[in-house]
Amino acid sequence: MTEFVGLVLAAGEGKRFGGPKAPFELYGERLVDRSVRILSEAGASHVYVVLGAWVGNVPHAECIVNSEWETGMGSSLRVGLNYLETETDFQRVVITLVDLPGLTAPAIQRVANDSQAISVATYDGTRGHPVAFNREHWTEVANSAYGDFGAREFLKSHAELVSSVDVSDVATGEDMDVRP
Image 1 (spheres, rainbow, N blue to C red):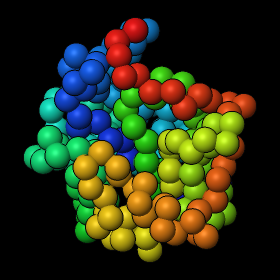
Image 2: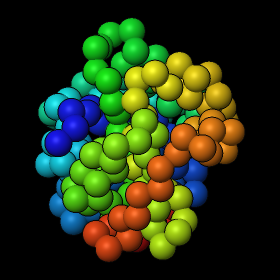
Image 3: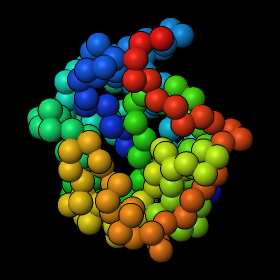
C-alpha cells in the first residue's frame, strides 16, 4: 500500500448550491467530515482541508484557509499544494472535492495505490476525482491552477504521464451542484 495524504478542496461558496458545501449535512454527516472520514478509511496518513467561504472546526484534519477562495478552485489547489510542499515531507497526495457523496474509500485506495506518478479516477471513461500526484509534480500543478480549472490544464499538457484508474464499479463521480 502506498503512503499518501489526503487534500480536500472545500473553500467554495456554493453559489448554485445556496451556500458553502463543506458544512452541509447529508444523512447526518457534514460533507467535509465525510470527505475526511473516507480519506482516512482509505489509508491517508493525514488529511488536510482547504477552507475559505466557510471556516470552522474539522475534526481529524488540519485546516488550511484560502483567503483567495473567491477566485475559484484553482487558488485552493495552489494553497493546498504549496502548504504541503513547504510544511510536510509527504511524497504523494490524493486530492478530492468536498461535494462528492458517491466517492468511496475503495475508489480512493485504487487511485492512491496506482503505480504512476499521476493517477486520475475515471467513471465509465470520464475523468473525475480523486486525483493523485507524486511530489515532483506539485509545484507545476500548483503553478498551472487558475479559476475553477484546478489541474485540468496540467493534466492535458502532460497526458503521457497520466494514468486513468477506473473506479466506476466502486464509486460515482457525481458532484452536488444543487441541494438534494
